[in-house]
Length: 307
Length: 309
Image 1 (cartoon, rainbow over the protein chains, first blue to last red):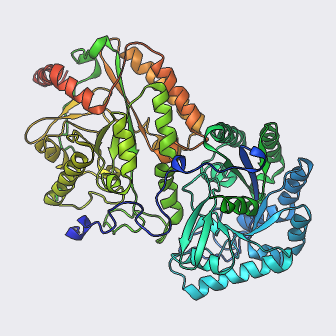
Image 2 (image 1 turned 45 degrees about the horizontal axis):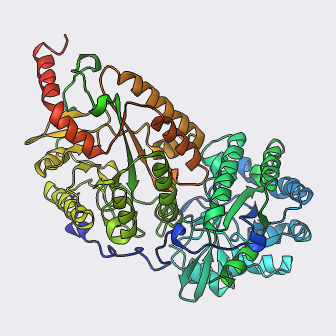
């Protein structure tokens, strides 16, 4: 099948990006971000609580970590749910012991099914942030605006009513969006979103309904990506996470504050033999001067106050 | 079009039957770094043979993962290369020069070479006609000349999507080398309809995208691989000069958890004498001047004696 000559027409070939979501800019050319107390790195610990419905659709794609065996895929359904029943309590206990708070990203379904764990996180001082309705409902270009808006409203409604918090942060299941996700999030009072993987610092995204702060949420040192997608060992996740911190910490001395996020899926890192690696990473980071242990909302507020 | 079992891209000449290659200043090895500076489109057109993005549009995760290289990773990669004394030979999606001219200026300021990696990494050569592929080459020549003043010398097909005639066209347009063949550790003549062309050792094995995203090796292991690859080629190069290429993608190697082990590997290479830190063009020009004829003669002789039978 030949390719038509339209294949050599490049309508977006010009200065900047080939879309309107944000302006092209180089992180190292932007002004430095000052963190409170002259801190070098904002340590942002981000546990995730996910529920994978047993009847999750395979189309248009399965969320990462999603069910992959013929129905009823008890294997994956239950393994993922382990995090909500056991793993998260282990993680919270560790973070409490180390006096580290953070932002927990929750499917709305967690608030509906397990309100106890939401209150547990709130009591432990965590920010509650949205992570879609559940892992069977991915956001994608084929959703109608009304259907997608209903997903967001339902997820946020559940999380807000159970947590009593504003819920201003968002991470889509599988970091997937439609063309309208950012608009829908802004209309639902979301201040920052973590889906895009293109920066190490927050930057403003434009939507038709106002600005949305893009937050740097580690992609390749995300525990699930590192262990499940790349098949690296937990020990190597620790090495890479330390290396990541070392680079950001060093860079911050010259280039201004940096954000170090540590995604911890409760069903991945809440497993008994892995928790020690989480402890080792956090103790290593906490042994450094110049840390600001923050929530996503605190980072967003700080960045937005700066010119 | 008929599919061939062997298009006769090059002739067989075994490693131990070659005239010795000598590099400038008695170097044993020419090391060149090829950063792929790429632009992937948010809404690419369809191609009959390859789907650019796995998820339905907009695939914001896949797109933004690559955009990271231009916004962030580039600077870390450049800093690591500056500190260890390496220049780059940029495998450039030429449209990037229009989107992000600042990156081109930074690389040009460092005397880096620019060669073509197509227009966008989401526009493939699959199912193109020869005439259509000429447009890509002409666009590449013109865009690189306009932005850098350089004469295009090298080619790496966008997303490695070649056609059977691609090398013939490259030679016709006066390019010196292609990076699309992975059969050797030394530059070798490519059989083309008219003119001459070199196959320049690039590498899948040393390519960060293959290592990180194909083989799924951890970052520090990549550093070890680079060092070991260098050590062996350096040893081999005592007999006959070798070429080592390190193909990079700033969106991968420029990540904070990867850059230090990469820089350490570069420092290992730079710590040796008799190493020629070169660009693709420099290697190709030197080879054409000093080795192309003798290597071509050796190829003919080996064939005449019955290919070592």
